[in-house]
Length: 240
Image (tube, rainbow, N blue to C red; front, top):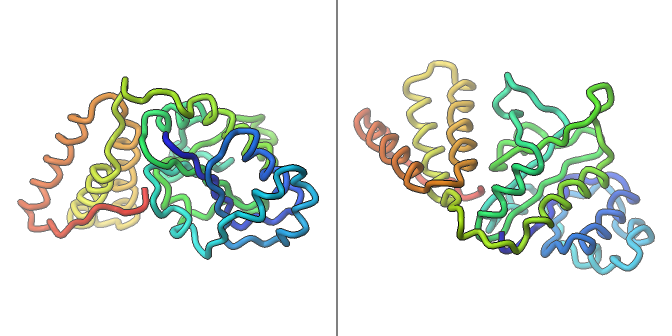
């Protein structure tokens, strides 16, 4: 991880926004993007204390896709996890941070709305989903508190050498996902299941931080299978 970008999607509360601005300085965040804020940023300044400059310099964009441009790895967060729903199959914050540590380039931490979090479409745009374990009877954390926990884990690994372990190349991960999608849409009748299969391949590839050759072998097999059945019009996913 060379740089860390925090992306807030649809933030609704001035207090949370001001507190998160302070967290950016606490944990040495490099970039700050806000997607379609639902709060008056001027109102949040009074809660940002000495970090008001962070709010004034935040980059406001109209979509998550815009906020993820130039990203090597994106980590979405959600309080809702499921072993039966591949989209909501999470890693914990420590595992997400370790994957970020060995990934070069800019890493994005994506935090959702206070009321409903991130939509399924938004989670799908991220490389990984992380969930903070909490009391099952009350698992929903305050947005600023959840952001602090995630940033603490990422701060512990930021700047540490990543040459001892090799992460998956973002372009290879993107190609693996797209070849898996092409094959799935050809061989699997259920289109939602086909998307789940493509997502599964992306997540598996993104978590592989020990042997790049393994990913290259998977890519080779999928690409040859696509060519064998005539489905080879594939381009790498740009937003990782």
